[in-house]
Image (tube, rainbow, N blue to C red; front, side, top):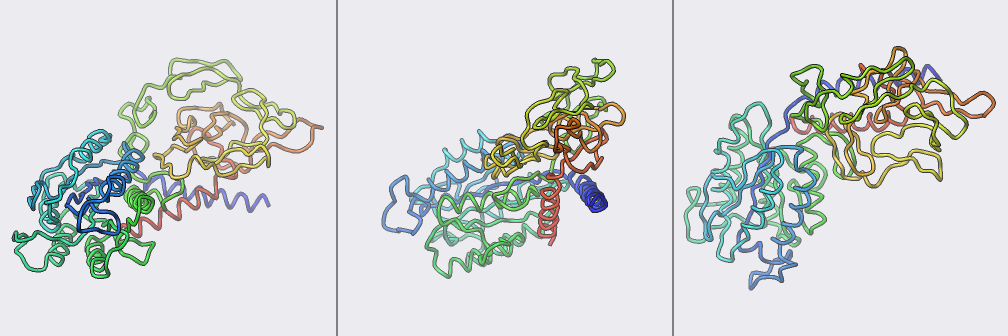
Length: 444
């Protein structure tokens, strides 16, 4: 059995090393291009005679769904916004309501509130795409570029002549294709809004999505459907997880893209990366006596005892003290200790939470791994996301107390002597496979 465990450790170690190397890429720019034509005031099934009650309007549902996603992903990638038309008829400019950048949440929500649809507004999708793709924000070749097109109808501009006239759906396909073919490439995700779209419109949306180069891989439709608020949020979440490399929608996981010090070393080698920002190591000025080490969460620091003495049954040594621990190990990210079964179980609070590299989700929040700040004494290793320094493989119980509270196999893959609990490995393996799948999708 020990040989099997050792082989598993080696395999996972190789996978983690590969993933670490692939995680340093910059996060992509994502500009939301939002349709604010008059039909966005209809209900989902479409009513061309008059507007729907406010709470049933497509715009209200779109605003709620976009707000949910903006709140979830703010600070995780550069996000911006443009709308069309830019007037109450068929006008379009290549300007942005919000330029793509980190932490644009408030600006994005303000833009949503200040650009409600107008009944007289048309749907100049082809000219909006043509104008937006030429904006200078897409000229950064060091990161991938994406447009998220959210629309509820066919391109239409009444008696106005746009994109040279003719078949405006075909002209929209051309505009989206031109964006994909320019350098750097700007790929387009398409979210089709409405629960009762006719077959012809679905065909157009499928054509837009295929032209954009990033069609929906998980459904019969090539575009991402938004038949109600729930499917809109699910579609938007799937798209955001795709561009950040975070795996399938609905699960936990870590982002593969990152502009922060989690993936890029701090200019001062003695600094530590705390919540994505370089800071002086709080342990730098602390010298601990023999049998202790400096523990820090990145903000505060103190000397604690090493864990080298076995604890009684039902306890585990945590940060130098024997404490009750039914599961007998530090649960992996997105999991928590179920005291009823004495097993680590999936934590529902982490469903949908996406964390930066070197972070993990615990109780619904992204937490840094203190082991990246800690140097354990020789021959000891750090328990990930806990910070305990203990011997490789954990500690047995005291003689005569029965059982064992060893924390599983030891894979020393962290320069600060990191200890990885056995339950971490299946989730990391799945994350690696999902990441590889997404990379193949994005490069296809």
